[in-house]
Image (cartoon, rainbow, N blue to C red; front, side, top):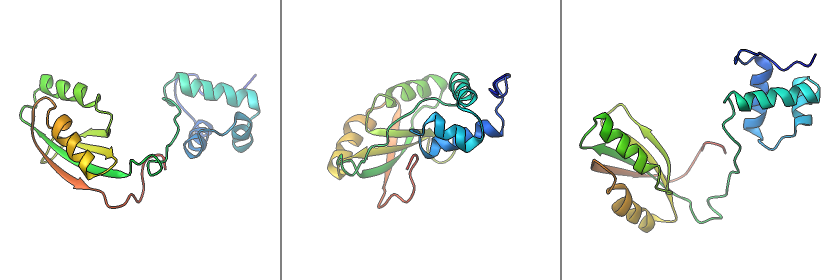
Length: 157
C-alpha cells in the first residue's frame, strides 16, 4: 500500500519536508522530491495532491524581477481609519484588494490600523497611487509613508 501520509488532515515530517522543498523551488519535480524525502514517486505524488487538496498549498506562482519590470520603488503606508467598526473595516478590506500596486495589506494592532506595502515605478507614481487610490479608500483618516531604501529579504526571494 502506498504511503500517502496522514489521512486525518494532519501533516507529518515527510509532508513538512515536501513543503520545505517546494518553498525553496516550486518547480521541483515529483521525482526529485521523492528522492529527497525517501519515498517512491507514486506515494510522493499522492502526498503532494493531498497537501494541495487539504489547503496546505494554496498555489504556485512565478517570482518576477521587479527591477527588470521597472517596479523597484517600495513604500510602506501606515493607514489610520476614521471608523473601525466591522462594516468600515470590511469596506476598506474589499476596496484595498482592488489596488494592484498594493502588494500586501496587514491590519495592525498599534498606533495605526493598516500597513500597506506598495510597489510602483518611482516616487511620482507612488504619490499618484497614494493621492488618488489609497487616500480615497473608505474611511481613511490619515496616512504616513516610509520609503524602502533597499530590500534585504523579501517574501519568496
